[in-house]
Length: 40
Image 1: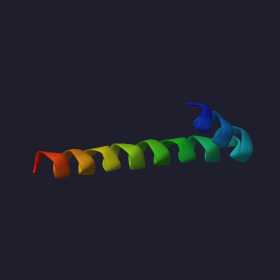
Image 2: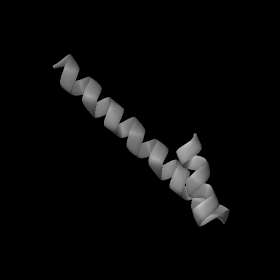
Image 3: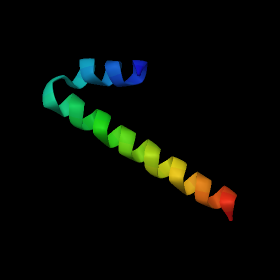
Image 4: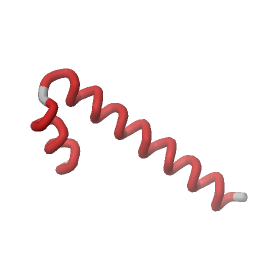
């Protein structure tokens, strides 16, 4: 959350919100890929 707040402060406005959404999507995709590798 702290990293997200810093990004919002630097970018500001809707761009910061889009950055937060992109970061959350990347983290979710990375976690799913790691889970798939471990389950195999």
